[in-house]
Length: 202
Image 1 (cartoon, rainbow, N blue to C red):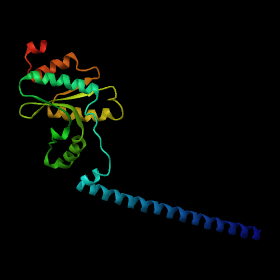
Image 2: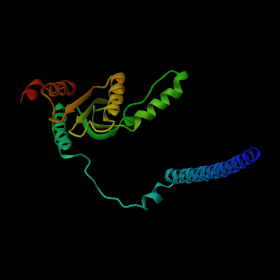
Image 3: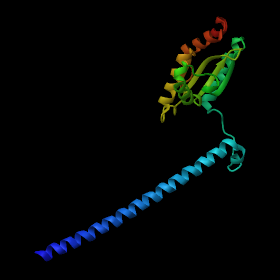
Image 4: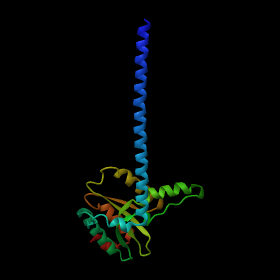
């Protein structure tokens, strides 16, 4: 019996030693991975710092080519909008692919400054398909084209934020279906642009 316990204890000691060695190796591997991840983060941080200060240097490291600003259905809508804006005679202008941060700014009480900054950061890079401004440069309407591929990914969430900021700023937000401007939307644009009734009827 004593011999059995001695053998059992010996086996348990070896098992414990084996577990300790395995655990040490695992911890050592995890530490190595952590150190590698930290070094990679530091490297990326340095690269980002360089990108902010030396964008021209980075730009030379890759190839560049032109691409269409709008796909064909978007361009067809742009042409129709351009025609409507031209009819207004009040000095309106039409722009395409404009960042929201270029024509909207966040406002808040002084104690909500941090929230204001975060909200602006979340919205500023979102892009309006089309923006109409008046002769003084003030935004008049945002027009979003809901094309066939528009509802892929997180498009719904992105558009929801756009709707909110336009609503709060009092800026009309017109969502055009894939088929193009509806009769009602054309009427809304005629009123916004002050197009005379006789021209709107033509």
